[in-house]
Image (tube, rainbow, N blue to C red; front, side):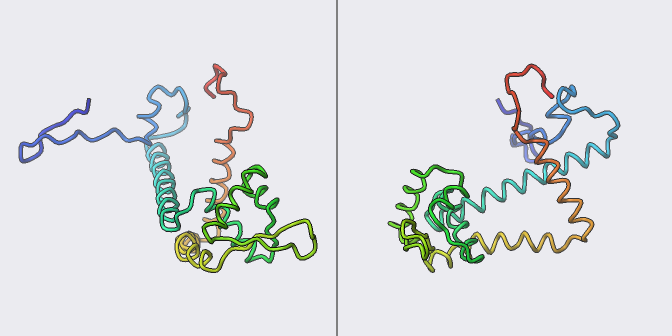
Length: 197
């Protein structure tokens, strides 16, 4: 049940929610995060950083969903379109096998994906220039234009944010993101282990 309190006009308004990305509210008894050596300012900065990462993830989800709606494509379809653009930009032949490997999906799933994209007018299959048994997949120009106008334009703005950093700041941010990726990797994680850390 949500608590409430009266506002200046005497109306009941919902009480403010606890901070979702606060160390203190998420782990008040230090069961997960050892705060030894952290002062109040450290904790405040870490809370702000975690909240900023959450806003970034939310913005990415919103962008991806808006692009999928605009292009009427699913998530895997959009990943395939992105891969095909990269192949085109780099002069790489996009075979069904390469698409399966890049998207980490099965051969059968790749065939269904390409059938779906071709029926919708997004891709075309063509003979491989040097292997008569193989096909190459090409993106239709209209689909490329739509993808570049939506997702591509928004992703390019990430570069603008990176350009505003000093070289040493970029190295620091890169190191932080790589370190965090290693920390949250599920490789070797046993969810049933009684140990929390």
